[in-house]
Image (tube, rainbow, N blue to C red; front, side):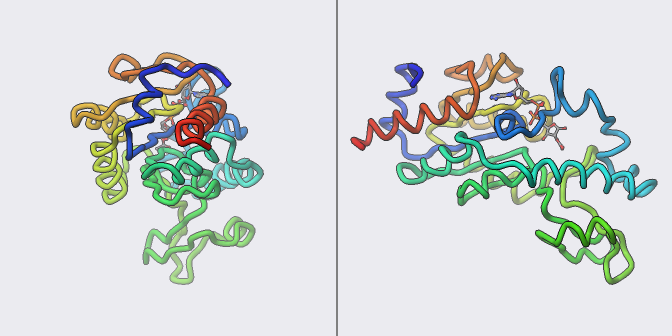
Length: 247
Ligand code: OAD
């Protein structure tokens, strides 16, 4: 087990409410590529052709092809030890998760309170009548993405230029502001409005702990920076908490 900073251990001893703000690096150890960086998704694909509503109107088949590809990757992955550690921490703290990821891995790991800022790739809705096709049979939807009303069904993910789901954002922000510790895990923190959340939490007095392989836009405002893999570091944190709680 890696040594954790003493200030973090002291905080873990006195805290009640933990909030995790997660990005693509959280799921990297599950085998899901991140967006930026050398092997990032946006190095290989153009968001303007794939992740916006105009692209979908122009060429829904292409956009569905792309989501089918990503769903395929995601459906073959599993929550990693980091997702599982966050879920297990619920035994010891009040825990809430705010995620920018659409991969559903926090839910699959067992976390109960999750704010999905950018939607969920396993959910869909019709752009004409709004009928939901949540956790819809993938094969059927991939072959026939037309609603019974005749409208196009789209994935329930936030595309460039679209608003975030307001309830998810507001509730997530509120949770972050009330947290004793906000862990900022595996995000480059460059996509807004999501990236406002750690700043708001800091202003409200939360203690910020960043877990990332590298320095990011948010590093300088964090109280502690742990440069390491999310899965490994969160497992270490869980082990330390078990020690603190006498297990
Ligand atoms: P990015 O790809 O921008 O950043 C991923 C971060 O994870 C980087 O800072 C990496 O250093 C870090 N990282 C990679 N592997 C890691 C590991 N094993 N452990 C810890 N950290 C690791 O992804 P996001 O910040 O999530 O938006 O991107 C934000 C948004 O941009 C996404 O939600 C998506 C994208 O466009 C939408 O789709 C709306």
